[in-house]
Amino acid sequence: MPIIPIQTESKRYQVYVGEGIRKEIRSFIDKHFNKLTKILIITDETVGSLHLKKLLDCLMPLEPVIFTAPSGEKAKTFDVYYSALGTALENRLDRKSVILALGGGAVGDLSGFVAASFMRGIPFIQIPTTILAHDSAVGGKVAINHPLGKNMIGAFHQPEAVFYDLELLSTLPEQEIRSGFAEVIKHSLIYDPDFYRWLKNNISDLTTLTTEQLTYSLTKGIAIKNEFVSKDEKETGIRAYLNFGHTLGHAIESEMGYGNFTHGEAVMIGMVFALKLSHDLNRLSFNLNEFIEWVQSLGYETKIPDGLVNEQLIEKMKQDKKTIGENIRFVLLEQIGKPILQEITEELLLKELNSF
Image (cartoon, rainbow, N blue to C red; front, side):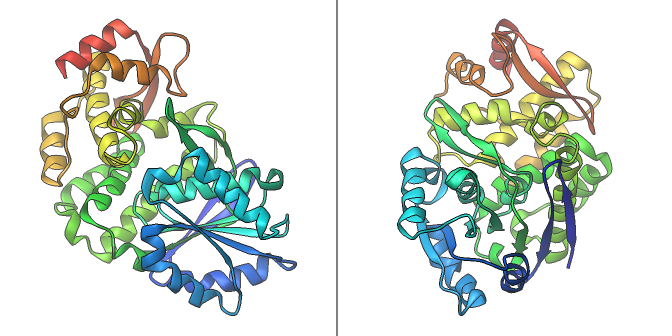
């Protein structure tokens, strides 16, 4: 059972990875919460129907309060956040209570923000059920969306632990596997050329991933994320490199309507664009055509969806958290494993988008 230590300025915790690891949550709670009053499980409609009973069985005889959010990005609205807070208040949660986030990245983001803001902060535990959440469940960035921007309302609030039960990934549809694996590929590109080569040489079909391939990919991705989070918890510097592909990716998600295009698939388009920019502006030595052929063989789209207008995408990118003034900051690569932040003018960006 891989155990990955996460060290940030505010907290040290563990990520436990393995098949059936959810069965260790009860003993963790007993050990770490001596005066526990209430447990609130936040999940969504899809995950709840598939996996909630499995978690409840592991927690018996404890009887948690359940809050069920809509599935996907629809969980990350102010109304759902407000409703979850109402559930916590109605059931008299207090500062000795704990929240369990059972679900993908959206549930983790919602649960973490509820935990961060309820009574000015109570503990929570991440129980990811998607590949995508190997990225979002680690590092303490929690948030909800606003129509004008993704993850614009939130906080930094680290979990007490992350229990990554690989058995819960078995029900993922192919589209969600693709969405999550895009973040695995991202981690390799910004930090580890050898890991990128391993992925390219070993991953040819996302629907037939072995347990060994999945375990290695996820633990490697989590360890790489820790390399950035441990040095820059609140994204004042190098943690921004983890947003490689996200500037355009978030704009595509917003323009398509949250939930109509998966996060990872939008980020993959953003990564292809960022790699092209890196080649055009920084002379990145990288076979982009070979990369595009590989990810297309895995089922990814690599072009901006039809119907989106480049000028409107730029307006969305101006609202990105990394943007300063009128210049939009992109995470680009000098070479594989060496990211940089680079400001790009609107004029140049429009030219590059038009040629993309």
